[in-house]
Length: 185
Image 1: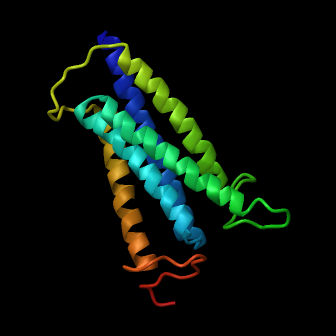
Image 2: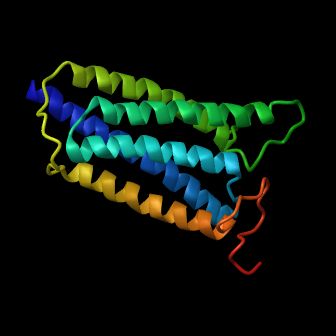
Image 3: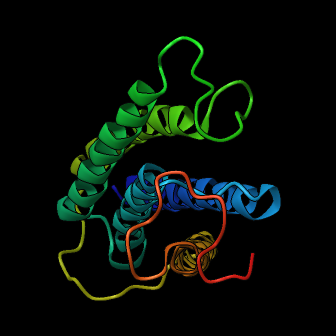
């Protein structure tokens, strides 16, 4: 059964790299195209972070149903948030919020990604349910892929928190942000 454990560890790390990639792409798009995320966009980023947190816990402490629970519930919350934004801009003639990427806006891509993540996480949970795992909740040594995924995820998390703070300050974010609150415009 150890073979399944290796696959599960690798798939958790790859999932975490995927989440990091999504967050990195959104962050780079924000910085270079000066398209600030709206409050619903920020909520979707938080949901991606929470999915990543569940996967990071699996990478660092071993797979647990509770870790998958965090990730699945967060993916469902992200689906609700992104579906809400899709429905806000579904009217004919509505240009949507932000520039489209490959024909769809980021919130539409987020809806697709959250659905795919929910299916992916369900599959990982089934794989992990088929094997016996050590029960200790002590940190373990992650492989190079797990370390890379964890470092990438934590770095993009810190950058997103800082950029949101610079964009919104300590108050509510504007509905249609055009400038960073704490940067001279």
